[in-house]
Image (cartoon, rainbow, N blue to C red; front, side, top):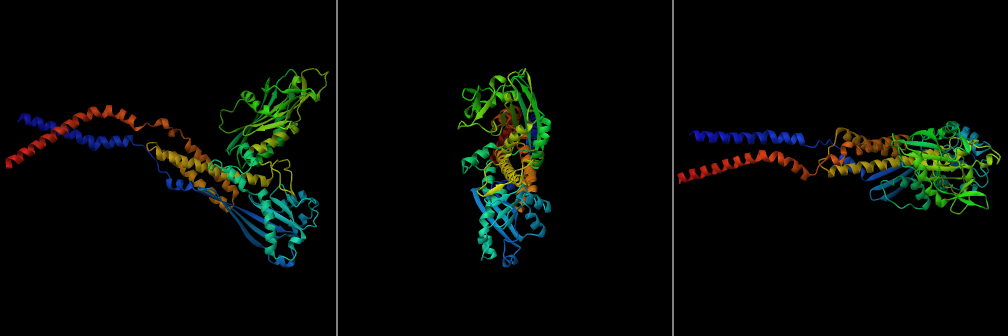
Length: 561
């Protein structure tokens, strides 16, 4: 009997331990070691893989006195809609809408159009009413008007205004509908310059769609400009290879405030810009220029320009505290032994600006000073640099690097100079359209890639902050797409900037590093030494109890028989 009681106590102990392990231990272990995965809007993210962008812009076409017959004027105002749709690939569709409102000019607009020059008329029309961001106004004037030169049919102003001249034969004996049908190709050509174009928008989709640009020029433009970023660092550097020859003075602070800051202020809706400057002594180009005996000057050929940047870049340093792209603008003053120095293009012709730029890096200008002093001058010579000349070159390079096109206008078009700001309102609108689409394309690619990563790695932790950033990015994408369709360019750009910030913050979160997670075979290698010594005695006891229970059952059946 004592042996039987001891055996029953052992069985009860084994059952109790097994029950505790199964009821308490296993759920506790499962709960404490499970991977926390916050909820993500996977269905909405999946919808982003098929992107349908609808860009809308408002256009006003205003007819001046003498462009319409009385019968045609009675049919105005009139509104028409022009739609285009392009399937970029199987997952991306672009649709463009221009809602064109036709009307006659007011008395004050007629007075403005009576100014002596188109530039004065453009300023007067701007003072009357400022067009909203993303919109355009086309004023149609008769052929007899002296506002435009004879060989110019379209004038593009500094604001969001264009002036179009039409011939008398275009309106003679036509209804309003026929006249508008004749004007439609010309209006479309004007909008290709002032508003968004299919070439610009498809180039902005480069992060999402791999395509072959339609021309070498468009490919060069897309590769030249910096990609969209919340901020940029601009560094101006003065390189003096021989301080014993030249003592250089440059008013970089005043020049930046006069020539660069107005341009950057106008670009403030796109990004934040910070500017710094430095002067580097004994900084060489790293390339030996070739001396030309006929000209008595040193020549730096276009083939050698690619080898200039790397040696110079090593001396520039970088702003390690910022992750923003850096735009470098270098002013190089050759030493007395290598002056004057001229840059030649591939056709062996002198570059007028004596400067060159490198795509997505910056620009370098060579500033010759040998003609500023005579052979009897005592070294070091004090040199005051003409900052107006230098900043004119750097501003042109900066326009190209931020995405402004340098292509010539169509025949018969006259584009007004940008003025002191360096940027027309319609140019800013074009850049805002492109940046909005680029931000949306980049963000959708980032979000869908992150969703695929989290779906493939089932044991990766999804923290609440990551889920919040992903949800915020998805919501901002949807709002940006809706604002583009509504034609609210400013709001669309703001939401697109928010979505790219949220998506990249989620994608590069440190908690998503793959080194923090282990494959299943490593987990088994960790858990088996812990659980096996405990589980083996329990399993053996349970097997022994089951064997005894079967033996007793067979004995009971045998007694019954």
